[in-house]
Amino acid sequence: LASLEVQPFPTVLEFPTGKTGGGHVLIAAGPCGVESREQTLKAARYVKAHGAGMLRGGAFKPRTSPYAFQGLGLEGLKILAEARRETGLPVVTEVLSPEQVELVAEYADALQIGARNAQNFALLQAVGEVKKPVLLKRGMSMTLEEFLMSAEYILSRGNMQVILVERGIRTFEKTTRFTLDVSAVPVLKSFTHLPVWVDPSHPAGKREWVIPLALAGLAAGADGLIVETHPEPEKALSDAAQQLHEHEFAELMQKAKRLLEAL
Ligand code: PEP
Ligand code: MN
Image 1 (cartoon, rainbow, N blue to C red):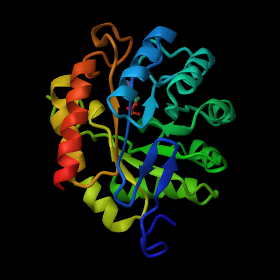
Image 2 (image 1 turned 120 degrees about the vertical axis):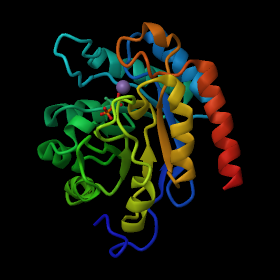
Image 3 (image 1 turned 180 degrees about the vertical axis):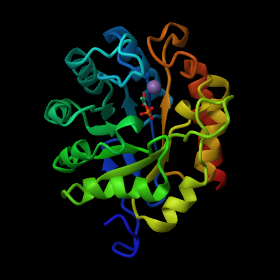
């Protein structure tokens, strides 16, 4: 169902703030995790002011350690909904289990499936039953064929609103957190009509490398970006090293605009 042989034209998804796919680029930005009302509203206001079309923020966080900050849960979803009311930005947030899908879909405009759940087939089927866009992250050890098969689990349940997100894979390189597979963008787009996005934050692991990776993704033809930014990144409860300061996010948005005009 994801194949260009089945649908020979790009899928275009529409949000109140813009479109993604078929030449339209949408940028989602916000903190890794929703930590407080103040932090999230601040981030929502400035990402909107700098031109983002969607707010990101995890209410349920998939952490490597069970002792690390796990997110605010339902309270986090309510904060995201308040940020949407105030800014008009649609919100995307991660769902961790099939049981959570109904609750998260009540609050969010788009559901994120994290890299660690990219082959959680029960979860993929559960979001396939929902009538909301799904941002499906590539698992860190997934081939592109496996990635497309995960998308099929969602599509085959009737939800055709799937966005594929390249977010870096495991290689022997240790300097960066993951290796951004820029080639995933043109390669996926040669097989599928679905929008393909890039997450430059998680592969970079360090904020100084986020802007070049984001621009590389756009130059390769990505239909969108999902970027982490925090009003006070040094104090972030997760992914502190890679979240952009506001001024860096503003710089990214300016450079992205110039690049897209030149393409
Ligand atoms: C995130 O977006 O904060 C996240 C956990 O991403 P990933 O699933 O790609 O690691
Ligand atoms: Mn993160």
